[in-house]
Image 1 (cartoon, rainbow, N blue to C red):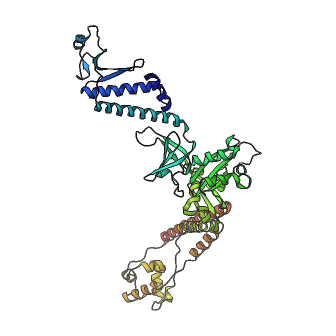
Image 2: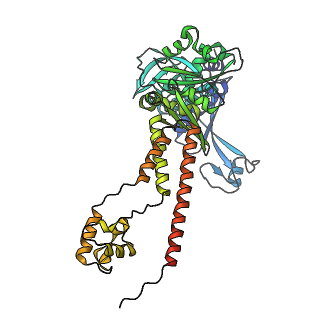
Image 3: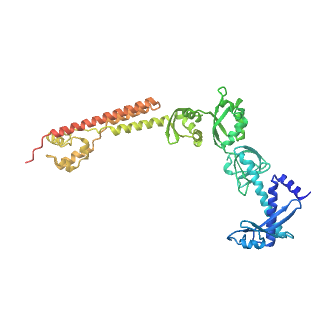
Amino acid sequence: MNLSEILQQVAREKDIDMQRWVEALEDAMASAAKKQHRIKEPVRSRLDLETGKFDAFIVKQVVEEVEDPIAEWTLEEGQEHDPDVKVGDEIHLPISTEGLGRIAAQAAKQVLYQRIREAERENVYNEFIGRLGEVVNGTVKRFERGDIIVDLGRTEAIAPRSEQSRHERYSQGERIRAVIVDVHTQPKGPQIVLSRTDPRLLVKLFEMEVPEIYDGTVQIKAAVRAPGERAKVAVISRERDVDPVGACVGMKGSRVQSIIRELRGEKIDIIEHSDDLVTFAQSALAPARITRVSVTHHGEIPHLDVIVEDEQLSLAIGKRGQNVRLASELLGARIDIKSETDVKDEVADALARMLTATQPEPKHIVDLSEVPGIGDKTAEKLAEAGFDELDRLQDATVDDVAAVEGVGRKTAEALLEWAHDQEVESPAQEEIEEEAAAAGSTAMGDEDFMAALSRALAESEAARAAAAAVEEEEDGAAGEQPEAPEKA
């Protein structure tokens, strides 16, 4: 068997192109010759497949201006070896390949191994790069710092710790099924990256178990997972006679149960997809029963306000917020869930604040003649000065009250002490609280909710109008009062 036949056989076994093999051998021989003769110049080798002989030679590039003296010659230097040479040509200076020593052979071996590894990794990349998202079966070969090395037969793959479900444990030699998520060309480690947590694994398992999905009758619109715990799959049927959820569940749950076993007990919610976001949200938040869903749009992501009964709140949110988080990913929307009681309280508080802000401040007029130590004439003068309003009296100082004619400091001090002891309850505030509570109790219906807000706004306008009328009347009365005579 000659050298050409040997190379062809090895190329078939390694699944490497014959020309790649020849180039690898030539590079290895060139490296060995360069090492043997301790040459700094570029060295190239050529293999004669018929005779099996290697020729090695130094390569010099002919250039107009030399930038690298080791690899380049000027035209004059080149013409000393070949008078017909031109700028841009190469000059080959033969060197001997006889009697290569151990060091040279070792260098050739390293170069040959490197070229073979590069060719093998390129073959793996070309084979698997078009299989992203495909499920493959393998065997657990070994463990490296938490990563699982999987034997796929012809090559190895890796399942990083980040792509493993924390609820799953594997032992050496155990079968593992995973989805291909990446194929790279890095020089170290397996090139194929597998995942047990990617939603594409769930989709592919459904395609394998449900014929209607495989043939396109039922489509999976979206799938989200909390690996090892819960998953949600939205499906839709292209034919009216086919129930998409029933097709995925199978007879007595046989189809979905096989997928649950493969995912080591991960619970799967199969939901019928709907173009109506409200209907889709009610299905996505199952098993909780939804009372009302309202949709608002803030930018590109919709915002859903979901109201549930008090006893359904924890079920809608799920363990560690898992149910609402998965539903949010499935819908591509932000979801806020509140109970009916919380919404009632919020509406009542909002109405109370609205009514309180617009309610005119009531004036509390007191009869000062009933205050101990205050006579009728003194009470009349205090009233003329505006101190018959309890709020103003409570805010006044002793000097302010004593400035009124006929009122001494002791009388002023006694009057202010009496005023500060008075507590006033606003009937208007009690009415506001009662109205807010009544409006909040009807918060669960859109029509009732809007009616409550309308009443609040109407009362606010009425309150503003009344306050304006009072101020106008006071201004008019003040303008008609005669000037007070000067004191003698």
